[in-house]
Amino acid sequence: MKNAIILCSGGLDSVVTAYYVKNKAKYGKIYILFFNYGQRTLKQEKRASKLCAEKLNGKFIEIKLPELNKISTSLINSAKKANKVSRKQLKNTEKEHLNWYVPCRNIIFLTYALAIAESKLIKNKQKYDIFTGFKNEGKEAYPDATSEFVSIMNKLQATAVKKNIRIIAPLINKDKEDIIQLGKEFGVDFRNTYSCYVGVNSKNNKHCGTCLSCRLRQEGFYWAGLQDPTNYEIKMKDFPENQLKNRH
Figure 1 (cartoon, rainbow, N blue to C red):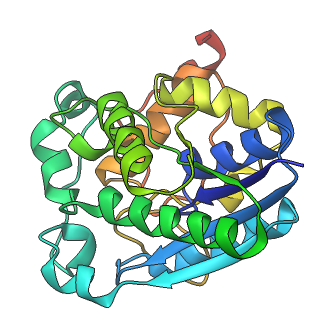
Figure 2: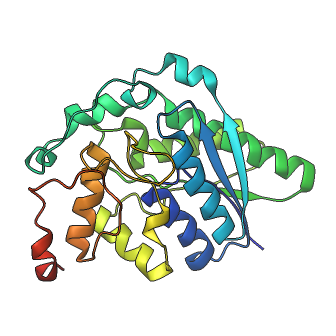
Figure 3: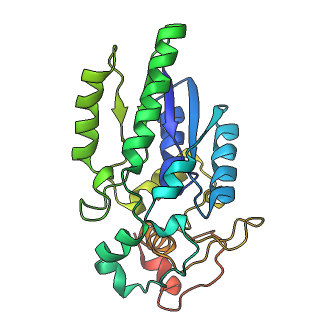
């Protein structure tokens, strides 16, 4: 039986990755690895990640990284007001992506995942592959979520780890709408995923509807030709939901 450790934030991409690992790649034993680094949507992300583990009969593991919160320059670790992103602004998101970038976050996350995988291999003689839901937005957006980055991390683990442990990003070359279509195929309930960077009310899983991540989520559903079931605080008027039937 194949074993997997899946980095999961509870967001759409990482949850679909988890379903891919279980239903498509046919891994048996899975761990949902969640990182608590004081992000402003911690409660929502943790709830979605735990639910993902429950639905896939996996084990939920939380790693607490309080020091990452202290050194982060990202708005995700700040209470500062976030920009409301228009649909037009999605044509060039480099500057807005930078506002949400957490320095070296994915290097840290993958290092922990490798340590857990190697520990299990040493203790229990069980090999685990590591999966991440990276979606390549371009090097200018998140430099630690590119195909090149994954390749380099695999080279690093080949040197640093006693046994080869693969790091796999199965969705990295797919567009958001393709990931949503895959999620539909695997039976993902998108209402149980959480993508918002800002957070509105931690009790009702509501998304703000205007931050960069919410806007990219909306755009993905639009181009996938599917109704967006997400509960948004604000629905931007520039999103042509009435044209849904003409898409894809």
